Every structure is written in structure tokens, then in C-alpha cells.
Image 1 (cartoon, rainbow, N blue to C red):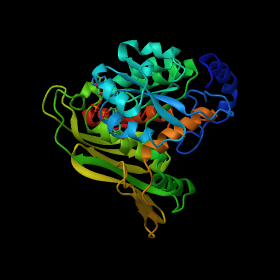
Image 2: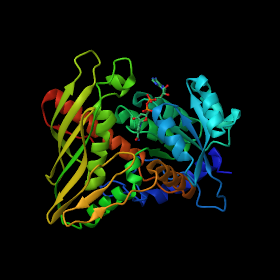
Image 3: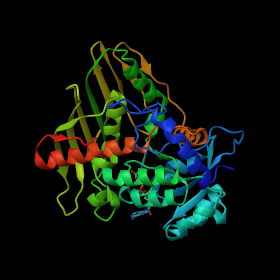
Length: 383
Ligand code: NAD
């Protein structure tokens, strides 16, 4: 048995002091480090125990990513397993239950999801719905006393992200964002090159993620601005987070940005470009699209360069360096690595690799990019 909500709260009180000793230096992110800024919920579980039961995950939202990637990946995990389903379309349940052997008592509709509070089989709720719905679902999941995993982008605004962080802190549950690249071993090699300054001080960076698709239709959430559709939220968050883990720095300002938008009410951006400036003056270029194909994260340093190309597909992420090193080879399922890392963080009471503060910081960058594109001006990024 995992700790009850009450025991987690007790642990949260006890761990607050300890957590304050783990703060990162300003401007650094928590990639691979088991620490995070003060805005994150404190580690919310007790120290390791003899209990090695797999943690039970309930998927909230049974759409394309849950069905195509996350549920299959949960068949490969060692520290957690698919045990519950939460949906607005109960007609989907029989097929899911048959395929994954999910018990009736672990299935919920959105309007009854609060009942999950009494279900000890479920430890974690993984929110995998359209971006504009993340805040409400994540807050409700935390209120039910369950640990929260939330897909990227974390929410629509930094204020919404903070609401999720606050709800998790209040309930003494963990919060992790579904940034799968941070768990991908080849990407972690690139991160280590930056941390070690293997090629000297960084001088510039670029981060591009786009695919040559069709403009999303108006009646689908990916075609609606207020639902979190469009290139910048959906794909661009990979470029923003890529620059964060690739440089291990937080940008200070958006120098300039452009957005090519659909010509219709509520039409989303099809392509967005942006330039970030860091506190030391270094510049980075970002580009994202749902109609143009590119995929790379490139870091220039004083004594060489290194890059991931492609930087964020589900499979085949690989990289190289200016002196011929290969950042490879192909690695096992990214999502199962992500969920096992996040399950172990819960079990061990350590900070997750992608905490809520990181998700929030990326949304602050996205909002600043939008503001810069709309005003034509440089925009400072709120910290
Ligand atoms: P999808 O359209 O395939 O599925 C969305 C699901 O949410 C559907 O089951 C839908 O019924 C449900 N839903 C709940 N509330 C809804 C509402 N108000 N309006 C519309 N649908 C609602 O989308 P998806 O591709 O599964 O994406 C879901 C989330 O996962 C998004 O946040 C997306 O950014 C993220 N995602 C992440 C990755 C990754 O690699 N980390 C990949 C794909 C999607």
C-alpha cells in the first residue's frame, strides 16, 4: 500500500524544510537533477520502503496519444502499470478494458472522477486531454489525493500552471510534466555535454520542430486557439523546452517573433519563429510548424558544436558532435522510461525530472513569444 493522503500530508510538512535546501541556482533547470525551484510541490512520498508494488496509473483522456503511445508503453514499465481509466466517452471503455484487463471498479467518467479518491488501487492520474483542459482536470486529480502526471504543454497560461502546482502542494501529491525527451538517454547525453561544458562556453543555439501536415480543421481542438491548438503550443513547446535542457539556462527575453496564422476566427498559428536572449546576452533561434518539416536541436560552443537530429520523434532520436561522436544508439520506449522515472520519484520521495515549475516556465516563454509576435516588440519573460 502507498501512503494515504493524510500520511502524505504529514510527510509534506516534514519535508518542507529539507526541500528548501535543494533549490536550484536562478536560471538553471532541473534536467536530470533531483531538485527544483520552490514553486514545486515538495517531494510527496515517504522514503523508500520494502513495498515494491507497482504504482497504479489511471489515464484521463483516451484519445490518440493515450491509445497509441502511453497505454502500450505502460505494458513495458517496471514501477507502474495501467490500472484505471477516466473518460468522457464511456463507449470507449469496453475495448480498453478488454485490451488491458482494467477492472470495472477502476473505470470512471469525467463527471464522477472525484469518486476515485476512495480507490486505493489508483496512485496516479495521468492527464492526456486537450491542453486547455489540463488545469481543470489536473486540479481535480490532485483534489482526489492522487499524484498528477500532466501532458505537455502544461496549461494555457503561467497562472493556470501555478493553480496546478498549488493544488498538488496543498494535497501533498507529486506533479510531473510529460516531457518525454528529458528521459530519453541520447538526449540526456547532450544535456550532460552542456552541464560539463565539454565544448566550452555556449555561444548560440537553435531548436526546430515541425511536421509537414495539413492545417488543422476548425472543429478539432488542435485547430482552435483557445483550446491550445496551433504550432507553438503543440510542437513549439518541444523547441522551448529543448532550448531549456540544451542550454540549461532560462531565457530573459523574446527579442522578436513571427506567427503565420490561419485566416479565420480562432485560427491557430501554422508556423512560428522566435529569437530568445539569455541573461548573458547569448541568442537562440526557435522555429515550429504544423505545415513545414524540420527537427533539430543544435548547440554552438566556443570549441565545437553538438546536436540532436531528429530531436523529438518517438523513436530514432540521435545526435552527433563536431568531433564526430555519435549520441546514440536507438533506445527503448521513451514513454516507459518517462513513467518509470516519474513513478520512482513518487516512491522515493524525490523531485521528478520535469517538475511543474519547468512546465510553467515554458508556458511563460510561449506567452512572451505570442506577445512579441502580436506587438512587434521585445518582451521580457516573467520568471
Ligand atoms: P486527441 O485529440 O487524440 O485526444 C484528446 C482526448 O481528450 C480525446 O479522448 C477527447 O475525447 C478528450 N477530451 C477531453 N476533454 C475534451 C474537450 N473539452 N475537448 C476535446 N476533447 C476532449 O489528442 P492527443 O493527441 O491524445 O493529445 C492529448 C494531449 O496529449 C495534449 O495535451 C497533447 O499536447 C499531448 N500529447 C503529447 C504528446 C507527447 O509526445 N508528449 C504526443 C501527443 C499528444
